[in-house]
Image (cartoon, rainbow, N blue to C red; front, side, top):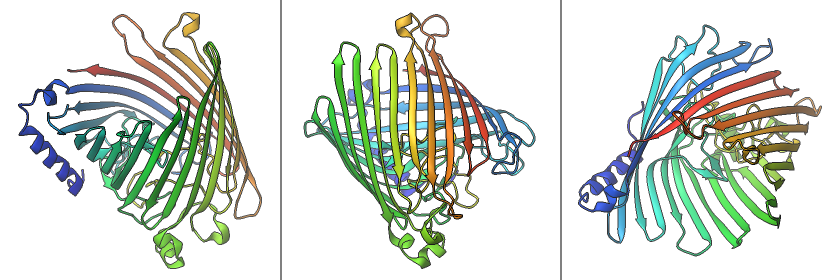
Length: 441
């Protein structure tokens, strides 16, 4: 693991202050710990075509352990506390030749690592309804989504402030310095897909305001030093149509432009560039993306339709360290409806139609069982050949949480995805997951 960062040392300092106040019962009384267990089998089949690492298939099986501790706060006007996590991954099977290009297990130079681990510590303070967190973070915000799609979650190092002191308004701000991939023990700097130079500062701020019980407006702004500045506008509304029926509307708009080194030819030549199609092959970030999603729910049924359009200056971007040389930092999420199992439909010029049907089997007497099927069709994708490209993806999901008996609370999940694209190899993905969270205290 990398040496402890300045932010983590500060978090440990907050922990030391908190320990000095352990006489305050709330710190201990409100503390809890849990052990998360996640067993995952991943089969990524490139249909006998060469994938990104030259192989036709990635097939692996691993076990993850996630020990989480959350303290309460010390008594007084300013409450202090500390959270901690210990993450451990263990390889159960990774056949010869099946590990290259893995997005779940790190490499040790001779193939899949036998095990990998990391520690995260977060100091926290609370004043009224305002909380500050310093250390290891997993943000879930429109301008940054921590990825949890493999054995262990992606984490970031930084500081975040969240305030709910004003009724119906949530304010958020923060600064991040480093990231740790879901398949790594090592921290890296920050970048975008296609960038090979690290940035060490991601600043963000935003507001979520409930205009009414069923209507929420959002605005966020973020800057990744030497790469981009991004603004986000969002609107979410739920319309009740009667007992058990509703229509949910989710509207999103992003405006993203170059910043710092990415805004100059010299900076882009030095590695601060974005991958994929850009006008004149400049590597400059220049994108506007809007989308709309509508979901009609009745009983256990949910029918969703939507549309997304990406402007043609460059791909849509958010933090992605996957192209930093020699870092093994692949795996990132985008706050897009189209961020799926195999594709994100975020390419320059891409227009995507979205359809999904989901069903909760509880009304049929099978609580805990849910399933869905989704389809995404993207076209008008810009390419260097000036010929617009197309792609489509179909996803199937089935989840069941055992409701009683010896295995009560055990969750079983299956994901299957098929991608056919004119810009990438034909590929199928199967992911089987068994997970359980054990409360320790």
